[in-house]
Image 1 (cartoon, rainbow, N blue to C red):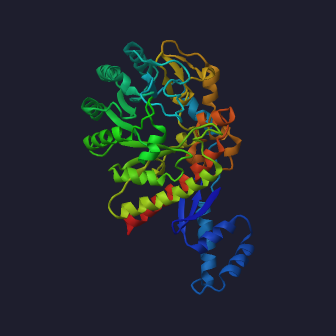
Image 2: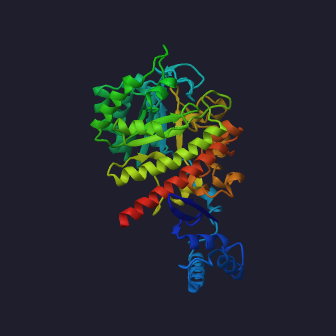
Image 3: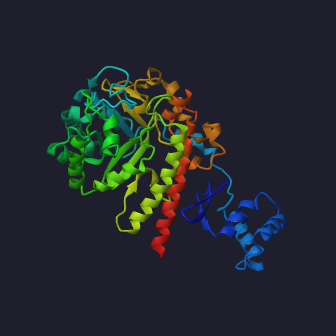
Length: 461
């Protein structure tokens, strides 16, 4: 299977199963499109009809191009078959029972009242609560006990707003550091915050202990303050931006993400990206809102068309800024065309419910943070382990080949089947497909690949 598209002045051909990326001239682009549809004589006839009046194309070019395509096919770089499906189940079976990452819901409460919050203002459809040190300690022990031979373990401090329980965050990191050597583990911590409670102590701690911080900013002041308000209805932009700037500067401009959400209010999210850039931020992410149809924040069909145009313009801006010597990264455009993810990740996805779990303030286990509060998805708890094997088995089976809609999609080995939570909330099944998300993902991938092609060509020049 191949995917062809033209963007940024490039004629791009992706060979889906080999991962090969080809940049070709228009002549080669057209012949590749015909190669498997017609026999050689028909291909030549159609190509002559189209290019007979193009003086740059000589007779020998037709045969040479056809032979080049044939050679690429024979070497497994074009029209390569999909041989991965038999591996899908076996690869997850090899790591069954091994947990490598936990999302600790350190606080089911928040000092903001964002109406689009999937976590119901941090409460996850339940009661407000904070995690005790004893529960968090047991969660870390659970991770160590169930991590097998994995040395590097990931822990995300999440909420709600985790800084509302900051002392426990600090105490848990200190405990993890105290057991690392004996357990032969290396903990990597991430902190996600809305920024209101950032101070010098938080900055010093995060720079010392957190491999990454995720900072919530929706871009333009009027956009950010539309949704990200406190319980009195006051916007938070002016309070948090200076704190974010201070933290990013202290981190040397590295190992952070400005994470924004775009909604029906700002499908033109590139304007928010530009504001972030003007504020001095260079590690950026903007995610589409997760909202029920009919919600005031939900993206409409018209919005989706605008968003896809914005993705193209974003790629153009990234190329421009890089050439000006002022590059920035966009999370969804980070792609490695040389090596990329291993086939395990390409088939199996994020590992939610198997390698990755979320822990509530009470110690209950869920497949990921977006399932917390959905009682049917509770896997067990950190004291007794996973006892809801029916749900876990469902996530074990959740791979790109478990979704019929993915089988003919060119992007399936880039998205690995997509987000199980989005699929569930859209279709009622973790093996379903969130179709609007698929459309946006495919456009992001086209733009990301084009931008990376341009970068590599520029470096060669």
